[in-house]
Length: 582
Image 1 (cartoon, helix red, strand yellow):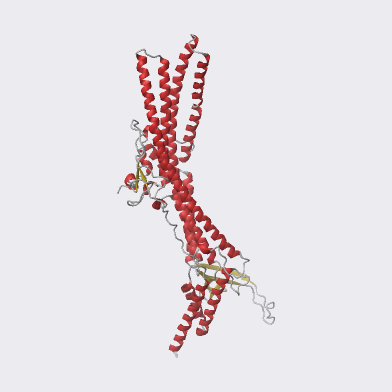
Image 2: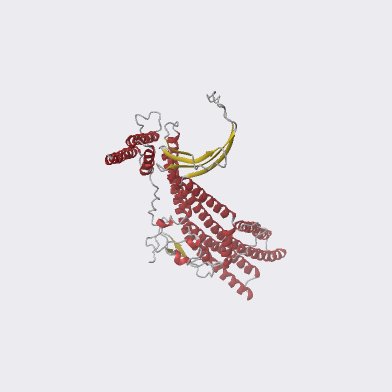
């Protein structure tokens, strides 16, 4: 007889479990975001019910039916509750597909046409004229574990960036946001993964009137104090993955903040390096422009003397005065730009302009990085922090779709408690715990006026938006790299041409000076040759600064991130038509 009862118990349990599993699986939605926009056909019995809610209702009916079968076999409250927990644990599953990272781009180069293996050079230029070589997959070999700005070989720049990374308020805010996201994830994880346990205690003074309770013949007791203490435990099972997807979304939010912080660090370092290059260029330009003004003033003195003797016309004199005034008017804007850059550097440094003590930079103190590490596009998308942040946003949107879908299905909550009640504090624990409760609750949304279904569609639309945003971020990143590569190529060609022009004007100036020493030409022609050389020198300085700034832009576009940047190992796929060294 005992074996027969045991067989009936097991047979009934597994029969109910199979019925519930089969029905729940039949009611699960399609596991593809590509078909989420199609409206689900409503079941004949779910008139006026959300489509997915109706499917959840089917699951709920199957669950209740299974419980009833098992309860008839066991006919005990304990085994019925045990079945509820077992069914919830064994049948629980996520109703939305798992997130998959987007496919890596198939592009093999960044530019429309292949890039040369190296840029042009200006051989006669001692600083900033070397050819820059593009190296694929050799980031670690180029950096040697150092941050990318160390390639400029300027200790003051290194110190400035390191201190800015430590003191910048924007980075401090981003770090605090990251810690906030991490703690929010831990809070939700603790609340959803583990049962909630609460301890309560109370003391209540009360009066009971038995007459009003329908017992007029019994005398009412005097006022008394009721002491109570209890422990309450509750846990909501993650039946259809709502909690898991919510945690997944919070984890993705943490990744978003982390990559945004990394992007802010990269941007800050690049902005400081670019500002330093700009400052050094402005100082060179101001110095050259002051020399040109001195030359023009000397020419004006000579021309005024010739005008007094009637050797030149008033028009010639007035034209030279206009040129001098034009050069003098170019100085204040350059000084203003220099001041603004210094103020900006102080801001990056986390100080006011009056507090900051910043070094002064010159172009000759900066070394142009000759080897430039590149990464193939398939691995580059895993290197740029803004692309990783966009991917994390897509992951978060995918998790939100899972949460919205799971909200259409039943929720199972198990709760219980035990405690003690007594009329005096001394007797509260004298007889042990005399109160207890145990309960199971299942909630299935039936009608919300289309709210849950609309929330699911909104989450799907947000996922589509995040997917489009990710693609836009990748495309914009490709544009940044392509622009930086082409800028380096054209800036090198421009510098080569301007350097040759400066060399020619310098040769002319030296020739005129030599002839002046021999009495072959007057001082006017020497000064005019010097002014033309200074103009060519000014253009060459601007081209040198463009090469430095372009190099900084390439490091930022590639997403090289300091000491942890770089690709692990070598790659052998072509990028931009550049031959790869194995």
